[in-house]
Image (cartoon, rainbow, N blue to C red; front, side):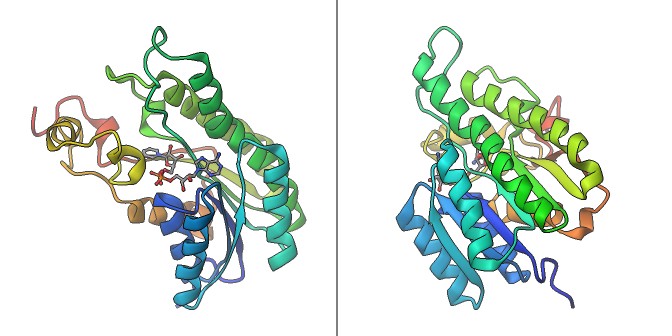
Length: 260
Ligand code: NAD
């Protein structure tokens, strides 16, 4: 069977862990040559080694997605190393432990969260879209979150606002670039069993409380997000652009869950 990303070059941010790592591995299995970018160099090199150990191609670039020069450099590296860019997965994100409601959240937490989660996506697109144009079109996938579409009584105001910004800019970019063969979609994961969330849900009690809201009664896996990113990245989703693609175990569909 033809691989789903045969001949494609994909740039994945946040590639050192979680969704980014699993997506780098899956994209490479599906024939893509992958550039992984992340702040965490050790994890990033490990991801690249994992891809290569499976027979794939992957290069790692150290990058802080909140910095213009780093985003320019990661896109340039994809084109220098593999000759083109077809898929841009703006996935890097942070959740600050001090992020709270409007009263309790420090301005610095707000600024850093917006800089990575929202500006990082903007800068990825600022430098990535010209490269996709040079390749004759392509697919952009931006990682948002289910928190961008429903409110929670356990607030993380900066994080939620940053992910709302990702949805808004995804829609606008999708419309702007639709006739250039560039599709732009947002992936909205539900609560996942990755480092990002488990750092907060560090007791069985906290985990159980969160799962009450998930109809499927379990956390999602980074591998499941990678499958969704693959679909959005590949030609299988050729008529899909500007969408808020919820992969959340039914969370946002629920009013009352089986656990009540
Ligand atoms: P993770 O913490 O396992 O991975 C995130 C990666 O992003 C890390 O490798 C980290 O080093 C990198 N990163 C952080 N700041 C960066 C920066 N400034 N520049 C470059 N890289 C940076 O988390 P994950 O669960 O894989 O999260 C990936 C994305 O999914 C994030 O955007 C996150 O907000 C989103 N998300 C996660 C969940 C969840 O429950 N885990 C739910 C919804 C959305």
